[in-house]
Length: 141
Image (cartoon, rainbow, N blue to C red; front, side):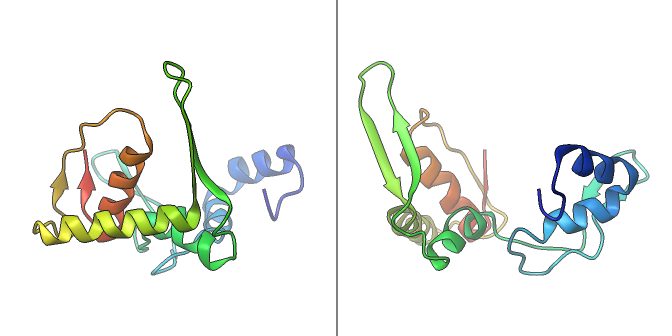
């Protein structure tokens, strides 16, 4: 919630000065190109969020946590209600698995902007596949 100390202060800031609020909130993640504006309205009624900025979702979800010394902390905990199986993956393990999968996608010719269909059940490997797409700039569906 920083720099806000209470929910009411955060809510008021978001309502009263949304541009300032979202630009301050955006400082909490890692950007390749930091945003100069939070939101831009388009003529068709839609809005573009952080239109002048770029980031890598995989870096924000995985890599920056390893870089910050949290590599051995659990990144994902999976539990099957059906089989009672549990699996935990640390940020470092996740980083390694994502990098390997991303390399596999690259070797298959997948590049930035390509679409990758992922048809898998909800499990850790599904997250690995999605993050690998994000790492190389491919879009998962």
